[in-house]
Length: 68
Image (cartoon, rainbow, N blue to C red; front, side, top):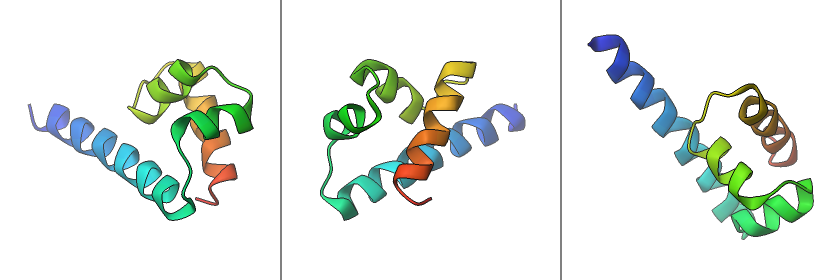
């Protein structure tokens, strides 16, 4: 299952990169969710790598806000 391993690694990389940007900015996920006006649980799911269309759209917004 090499493809599954690659998917897990990519998901972990996305989560790590977003969390590093949040740390660099001194921002919490709660602050990010307020800034985006999106439910904190939805933001958390998106950061954790959920691949629903909603989570993908949220990640795009996160990338814009964090200049990624």
